Amino acid sequence: MTDSAKVRRRATALALIPATAGVFGASVAWASSHDPFSAAAGAAGAPAASAPAGQTTTPDPQATVDQKVTDLAAKISQAQDRIAQLQATLDAQTGGTAPQPGTSAASKSTSKTTAPAAAGAPAAAAPAPKPAPAVQVVTKPSGA
Amino acid sequence: MTAVHARQGAGPTLLDGSAVLSFRAMASPITLTVLRPGPDGDACLERAAEVIRDVERTCSRFDAESALSLANAAPSRWHDVPATLVWAVEEAHRAYWETGGLFDPRVLDVLLSWGYDRSLPFGSGEVDRTASSVPMTPPPDRPDGAFPWWPEVARGDIGWRLNLAGQPIDLGGIGKGLAVRWAAAELANAGQGYSVDAGGDCAFGGVGPDGDGWHVGVEDPADPDQLVLVLDLIDTGCATSSTRLRRWRVGGAPVHHLVDPRTRRPGGDGLVAVTVVASDPAWSEVWSKTLFLAGAAEIRSRAERLELAAAWVEEDGTVGTTTALDPMVIWRRGDV
Image 1: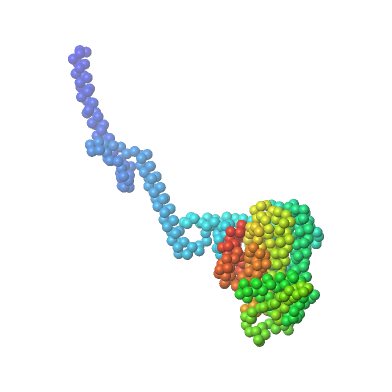
Image 2: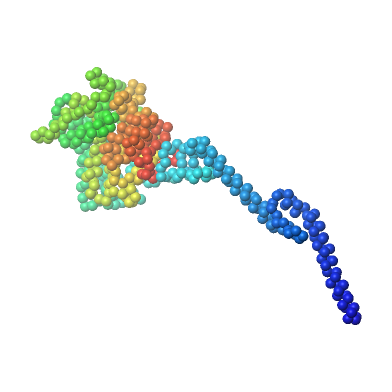
């Protein structure tokens, strides 16, 4: 092969590179516009990073999953806030007389052996009653 | 915790570092305890026991030969009496005025009219008495029971003289409280602490056998084997007034020994027991008895107004405590 032929062949190859890249890029763009997973994410209203004009991009599945987890965590937080609001409303309606964990409904006073429940705390199962400590003397009716 | 045991009817017993003397007086079991007694511990216990027996001999209305019984037999006359009876009457008179007349030893005539003229076997079952001939209402010249009580005492050449101003009296409750006070005074220097347990009336000196106070149970009047509260007491007195034991029937009608002098009827509607913790055991007795008369509807307001450390048990089992008592409560049964 002459030197001139080699030069022509290289020039042709170099000329074909942009064309190949263009065809490949067009294919990717078409596939992206017809990706059902990407469309679903967009319909959910999740904020997506938009590609700069004139550029094409592919959706990141991991980023989509992380976004869903974030959304669910936000909903859980909202539900917890709502439960706290409802508990506060219930306490207000019962005038603070609703039985609380650690207190006796029949008790007319608070002793240091009973701990008041934190406001808004969810009801818990009553703990087993503590046995009486050993005593040295019992006060009782005269003559007993 | 140091175990403290007592042996009935014997001299002081040393157990687990505590000297204990138990005997029966004033219709109640008495237990005197001295923690880590000093060299005079036993002698102090014997003197304390003698103080209690002296009060019983002097102030019992069930002993026809006691100084009180002799004075009661002729309440309008002057009598030569021991100093113990004079001190007891003076303290009862002080309690009468301090409580606005709610503590009134003159309700004896009501108790007598209900047949409580002797020590009745309350512990053996239901007691039924027939009404006696003693009038149950105040004499016509002293209507509504609101007449003042002025017993007189005088120091004679050979001792004390007493005039009960015309009406017999019952010193049962305050007599036992005073016995506990005076017995406690005898034990004050007997060791590193003491307790005087006379049933409903108690006194405690020092910080208890384990150094964290005397742990005192408050009996459940519905079940004497159970407690409703446990208190942590240091250097104080304590008394319980209850209808659990001293209640009986008169002609089928239920009565008990805590008579309201305003109505001359059984007092304390809705209550079964009242416990008061006060520095002096005699005044613990005075306040527990008069608080009882307030009844379930009024006891909290009255006890709080007087700033008393008090607990009470209502007929439905409800237990109430005052804000002054709450810091002393170290255990409360879960269902009360």
